[in-house]
Length: 185
Image (tube, rainbow, N blue to C red; front, top):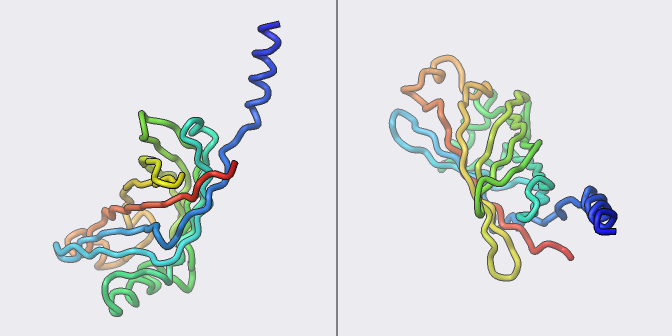
């Protein structure tokens, strides 16, 4: 009888997946930093959509899909913003969105996780690993935060003279904070 109960319990949990959580976009952010001739230039994206299904107790059932509106880049000035969306850089006309879709999520330790998935910028997909932390907040919200780096030339960002690392850094740290609404019961 105990064996039968254990089998039923195992079968019942096979279909369990994390519940979709609404992302509070007004209190969430995706930012980046590059060095231009040795000077840090910080930027962010003002608009993005995210579908996050996160369960800290069963991270393997979690998933994430994000889409960033390239036209919403804020690189600190009108000139920098308009340059960033030109064809040689992020190319908002040809590729209006950058996307990330997770393929797996796993726990690394208490409150620490990593998501593996496909990041696509300018139509160029690359497998990446994104380490992040999850912290429960007041009111049942959850804050996911992390940082990873991309090599801009892997995605065709910048070109010609800009491919030289001394003008604009090739390594681009990307930081994010996503505030998830409470899980629906």
